[in-house]
Image 1 (cartoon, each protein chain N blue to C red):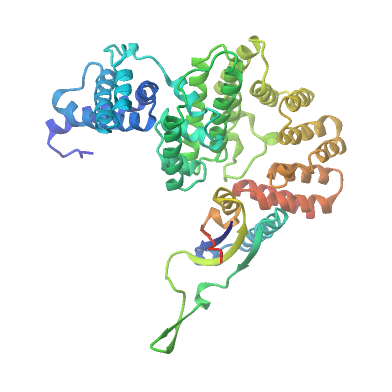
Image 2 (spheres, rainbow over the protein chains, first blue to last red):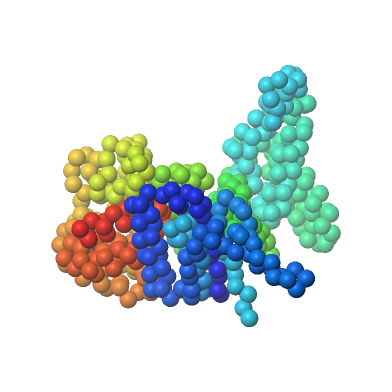
Length: 115
Length: 423
């Protein structure tokens, strides 16, 4: 089964992180990605720019509306994602727990609807 | 719950009654449930009846006073609920059967000590071969200790609702598949007891992952597992492996405080402050292990406890007994064939025969698919590669270990090791 791991974290806290801690976090992400590749579970994954770079788009009465900012204002914002291929939810949870951000943020796991 | 400014009389009585009910719930819940479940063969129905009985106690005891023998009162109330439920359920033949079972002599006898301890039978039902291994520990924790599905799910990293469904299905399976509530015969006991002990140890290991106690429910899980270990060892005093597991958990538990420094960073065994080890727990472990050894039937848990005993030697000021550790792992490997044992053995061997020898021993499990996502394998490999001067390979192995680690403190420790190698 494929799952999307959506990484939600506090951008303000992340921005305030000391340089050394940020480097350690990035290093941990590199190792985490490597481990997923070695285990053959990684399908895709990217880091997103902060939510203040977000743009919302919708079409109302045939007119395209464009708005600034993220879809939902909340304490934690979507900061990146991985898509993994694993046999079941238990293994997806194990990989989510290994994600370096799971210690300070929240990882939302969603099964991907196969097309 | 009442506050201090309520109506004094009613509140006092209510408080006394609810405190009494809580105390009985803590002390006797597992015992009462085991007794009811062993007779109705239906854990879920017994749980429902028992919670209704506790609710009835909270309703009646404030007015009528706490009964002389609260356990017997609860048992009688729960038995009535069980019989009512069986009547309501319809299917007459089945209901009649259950009623017959419930009407057996001894049911609800007045003296508290006359309520036989059936928790062992309940534990063997929970760890029956017909129950999926991963569900055995959760079932034990819920039935014998009364932990709720949310707490158990939390501890085993499973969503609460999922854990709740699994527990419900597990209990239904015990009832529908006719899994017996009995202590196995001597000839089948070793295998069956192993399943019970493995489930307890799995619960302990989950609780062990959080030595700093940052997640209270996991710390509690280690304590609950230890409690189950003591219970089993006391109910089966002639089973050396039950004592061995108890000793093993006590040795590990004795070092809990020493595994983190003041800043919450991970401290490996070799550099732990032995003053922080819990001497009373080590003494209790030594006694349990000696008693187990005197029974003359070695086994996996006794050997693992003996390894921990050798690691505990620095408490007396001496070095860890590495040759003994290697020998014990040799014996364990013959017994279990486990790649985890092979990894630990390789590390121990590196302390007696050098890093090259350790690395060669580690190579033997390198192709085992079970180790490729097992953090300790990569950490051990990285350490040994670093010691033998293979810096590039060591860094790559650290990278795997860091990527697979769940505990942030251990991850930072591995990152520091890796960074030190790059300097």
